[in-house]
Length: 147
Image 1 (cartoon, one colour):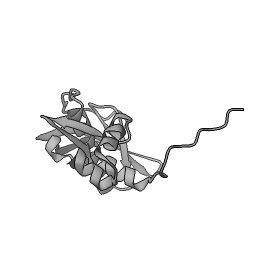
Image 2 (cartoon, rainbow, N blue to C red):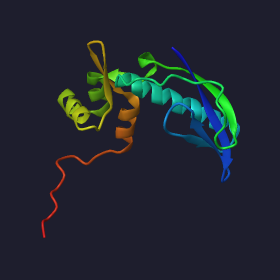
Image 3 (cartoon, rainbow, N blue to C red):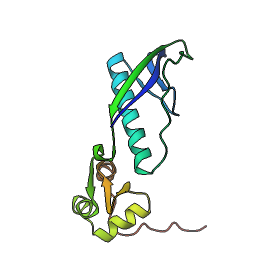
Image 4 (cartoon, rainbow, N blue to C red):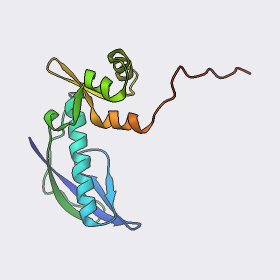
């Protein structure tokens, strides 16, 4: 589905700061093209998160007046649960070289991001890639000595 929202772009300390009018948060870029790409990525990610967790999407408003003296830019993205890079829990286990039970524990402990779509549980590729960038040592963490 196509989602369209207005953002304000304004310069500050050598960056283009980008604020959405209808949501919390912001992003930035060094030049206009990068700022537009960052705004689109930010909007797509925010919408996907809200859809994964059944959070309501704010109604977009149009014809906004800049609050910081910047320029209003309209950003449109295609987003939905089907646009999220994801794999099944069993595929996540294979990619992480762990057991399916360990994937369940990692989801429970917030180490992997997952969502349910129908009867299927999906693990986001972003969370798997983040996990692979931060390899953990084998075994249980050592308890710190109590003084």
